[in-house]
Length: 514
Image (cartoon, rainbow, N blue to C red; front, side):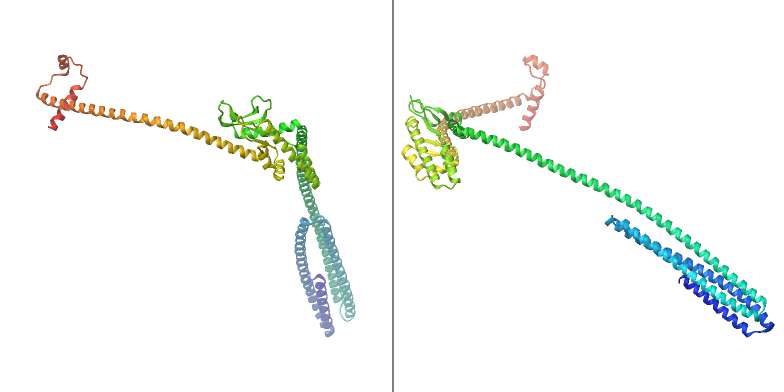
């Protein structure tokens, strides 16, 4: 129930009381009527005072309840608004201040509207009550013409009392409203200050976290960029080293003599992987009295009649210019250029095979064939693609064309053959040693039999001596034994200490056997 409704109810009660009092005045006349009017006026005054007091107390209670409910609702609304505000503050930091200001302004507008409504209601109630009081005063004046002066004074006192009570009530309501407004303003100010502090703390925390996260991510990004730059610099250094190595290799392979050295180095590496240094030699004059020397030669097992080794000549060749022209023609898809370059390689290999046949192959000083080594698998593959080239080199010049892989397999096969021959040679020697061991083992058996026989004869002799000893002991058992020292002196025998005791034990044992 609102304050305005309470005021209207009080005014209606007052009007009803006044109407009842006017009816009573009309019904009664004379002195009795005046006396009764005086009594009724006093009674009415008391009732009105009690009613006004009860109404004021009830109005005060209702006002307190209304204020408490309003405060509770306002507190609950403030709590809900604050919780929503905090939630919105966590989600949207930028909209918090604006939302809070809008809510505070709305609350202030509501409070101002409430205050204005209360003021208007009080003003209207005061005006209505004043009008009613004026009407009552006019009625009292009219009745005063018929009544006594006491009733007029009582009504005046009643009107004054009612006016004072209403004025006091209005003053108290204004004071309470002012206090409520002051308390609400203070509370709103405190809430606003607290929210500003929290907003500042949250803003500082968010700024700190953003600053730390930004620094961390920037540091990680700079670190990744530095790592990538370091990797790029390292890759550039490796590329420079590779370019320098490729340039060095290109310079090495450009010179004809250097290309020959490249093939010789690769051939020497393959020979070192398979053979021992005693199984091959370099720069060998395979033909006696000739100044021509082959790059490498393998010493085969077995020797000639003059004691010299049997050589297998191997020479390395690398026609680089012809091979590069072939690769360039293949890149250009030039069929004529490819065929011309391949034909040039074939002619060059035939010429080198003929040179090996004429300079380095000379049976029986060497084998009846030699080897032509090409240092790259690509060049060897191109030679294999030429129809009949490999067979022609073997048939016409007794030269076998080999590449790095083929030469390694061939050398491994030769090494296995060398090991097989060595094992066969060593097996004959082992067989002779086993025969000698067998002969000596037979002699050892005879000596062992003679030793066994001698040991058996010695064992029999010892057994016979033991038997004779026991017989002599039995015969001497009845003879009284002399003390050990006396017996030693008599027989001039240095018997060891305890020998007599042992002799007695032996005699007792012989007696037990008998």
